[in-house]
Length: 544
Image 1 (tube, helix red, strand yellow):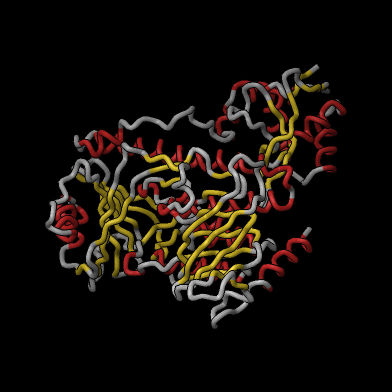
Image 2 (tube, one colour):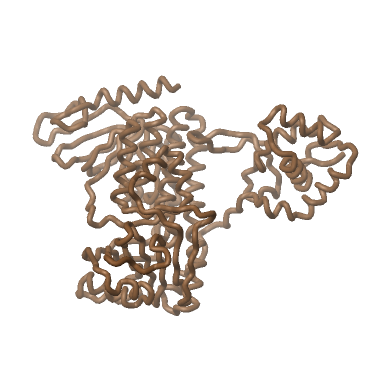
């Protein structure tokens, strides 16, 4: 299968070498006039958008042997935002093979956050276990990811403006489906490319997402006004690496440092409830909002604003369905979460990884394409809904002090449609569960045991994720546990399915443990006994 994938990549590259001194390849033209359209051979994936989602998906797919063309438009670097990336992003950087490049990319590291939320007291929160995050200028961060995508073999076309996307029928079966993307480049040439998958990673622009996929959240219309500031003598903070967040009467502000002396300061307002000053200009609007803060206003005294403030839409939206035959909505194209979370880039990278997994699975095992697409949509909605619930809690806290429609409206926006997803299995709660403790004591006190499968236990194949593909794995399924209904395979690295299969064959717990470790990776005896106790408590196994 790898050889077949590589041959597809080689064909795509050989069909698309160099024309007019540009690295676009041995392209053939449909006509010979000034507006000649350059047509290339099909790719496995065409990715629209060169932000974190697009670059990450391109790097992964290319490194897995797929032919990829990424189209990224020319952007205004002067309006690039500063963003805070939490330490948990490192797991995604590892998946991308990007950790070393990012750690050596010259980005400022951060130890946590300082917050003035609701009441005026200062809350300082360091990241757990002394971990550090990253404070990045998005233009520099995005450029690094694009270089990594290209180094993996993705064909990156800069200065590309997508003019049309002709998708396969939405009524077709999930999986690869040839679509056509037309785009122009800065040299005025026109291009056409086909692909088995089109990934819309165009963020808020939503090249594909705006075709009926996207649903706006009318309760959270937000405008961000941003500028950069410097202070030659430093900021006088206990920890100058911190992201700063402050609420005020009808909005909130945040500040991200990108060097020891330079910070982005952004205010978030609702244009429906805040008078932005009519024609007085964006500078006056921005300064007026800064004047409503307390801590940040004091911080900026004596500082120099280096840029004219600019505005960008930060209103929320989501897609109920995140893809179809041959198309996926990835990152901010699928949904936009409140910047309050500081998880926007992390969400984009996680979405990109999962999208790459879906594409790879669909191209190598089309029988699982539908399962993979359903899993992708479910995960995207869960991430969006969890963010909305978290933000609503914070907004309610601020509304208790700031009795303004900006806060009360957001606090009363309500939960997303549908029940809240069940949390993952909570090990700490299981350790205190009375039934689990009773089962453990029963095992300790028994000279010998007879175990059989519980009457309500089913072992079913359910979708699961590996590093690069969706697979079906056998899981234990019980009516009430785990609560999410997806079943469970592992608990503290114990293979529960294998344990249930082995348990009826042995009458002594030590013998069962030895049999398990002969067939499965080694585990500790306490973890093994804990897992066995949970299986008894939940009815997966019963004592005869």
